[in-house]
Image 1 (tube, helix red, strand yellow):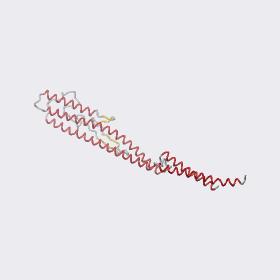
Image 2 (cartoon, one colour):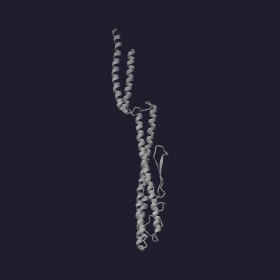
Image 3 (cartoon, helix red, strand yellow):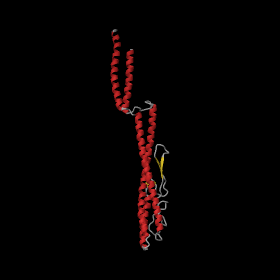
Image 4 (tube, rainbow, N blue to C red):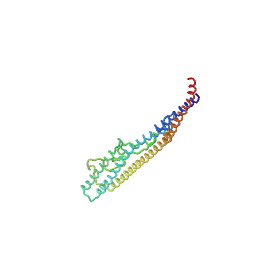
Length: 275
C-alpha cells in the first residue's frame, strides 16, 4: 500500500502542476494574482496605476494641444492681417493724398483690424481661448503625478489688450472709420510696428508652448511603452517554455499512471490467494 500511496501523491502533484501550466498558457500570465507571487504582483499593480495616470495626462495634453493649436492658428492669422494693415497705414501717411483717399485707406485698415479682433475672440477650443480678453492661462497635466503640469500663458490679442494695438481713438471692432479724426503720421506707423513686434513675440511663445506639449507627449508615450514592457517582463508567461513544460508533464502523468497500475498489482495478487 505504501507504493500505491506514493504513486497517488505523485500523480496529484503532477496534476496540480499541469493545471498551473495550463492556466498560465490560457491567461498568458505567470503572475496572475497575488497568490502566484505577492511581491511581483504588487509591483506590477503599481506600474499599471502609473500608466493609468499617464493616460490621463495624455488626454490632458491632447486637449491642451487643441487649445494651443487653435490659438496659434488665429495668432498667425492676426499677424498676417497686421502686415496688410501696416501697408494701408503707411500709404495713408502720404501727405500728397487728399482726405478722401487717406480715409479710404484707413477704412480698409479698420476692416482688416476688425477681422484680426474677431480672430482673437473666436479662437476657442473646448471652451478655452488663450487670445480673448480675460482669457485664463492653460495648465496641462504632463505626467503621472498631479503636480506635474505645464503652464502656457494666455496672450490677449484683442485690440488694446496690451499686445495687439491698432492705435486708434477707440478699440476695434468698429463699424466705420468715423473715429479717425486726423491723417495718420509716421509716429502712428512706428507705434503700430511696435505692436506688430509684440504680436510676433506672442506667436513665438505660443509656438514654443505647442512644441513643448509635443515633446512631453512623446516622452509620456515612451514612458508608457517602457512601463508596459516592464509589466510584461514581470508577469507575462513564456508561452513557448510553458508549452514545453506541459508536454513534459503530460508524459510524466502517463508514466505515473503506469507506475500506479504496477503498484496496484501487488494487492490484487495477495487478494487472489483468498479467493
